[in-house]
Image 1 (tube, one colour):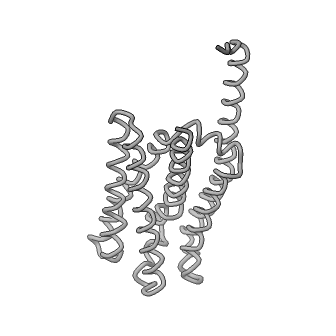
Image 2 (cartoon, rainbow, N blue to C red):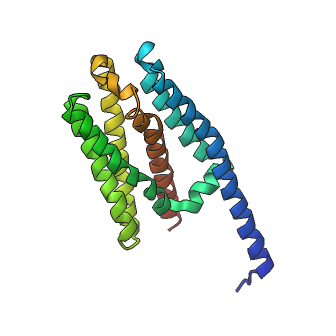
Amino acid sequence: MTTIHPLAKDERENESNDETSGGWRVLGIGFGTYAILATLFAGAGVFTKFDTNLFPATVVFATVTLTLSYFYVPSIRALAERLGPYGLAAFHVWRIPAALMFLYYDWHGLLPMTFVNLAGWGDMLAGVLAALVMVLPRRTRTITGFHVIGFLDFVVAVGTGITLNLIAPSSMANIMLLPVALIPLIGVPISGATHIAALHMLWKQRRVA
């Protein structure tokens, strides 16, 4: 039986903590800068003044970049692995207030009913499931089920938003303005990237098992 020396164990823990801190730092600088710029653009109405495809393209770009950072930036990868699928699930509780905002916009005729019915109620389901995951016993099936359902909602919401933006751009104009613009610009990339990271980790765990 191999015995791990206490000092060696402490060194590994310190290295892990350093990598995790580095991940937060890189994420804060990189995604934080993007979030500030995206918010300023939305506040200035930039997305409504130019090509309407600029807004969904920005959301997709942010989502892809954040996802790739998990696979190719060691500090981001270390941070995600430190949080694990359960820790990453906690981020998705934000989808409850997002759903409520979508429903508010629907009640006031500011967003298409089709979009709200799919994205709004889907986010409500994902947010409630994320909250339940935090209190239920930790089981692989539970966390896997959450991330699969949440990711499907992410795909449907983004797909519906892009489709409506292409066929009826005027109906989606309000989503490009603050405050609701923060949901697709900031929340959607975080949701998509954390779901993919969590599902990748769960897939790796299953292969090892």
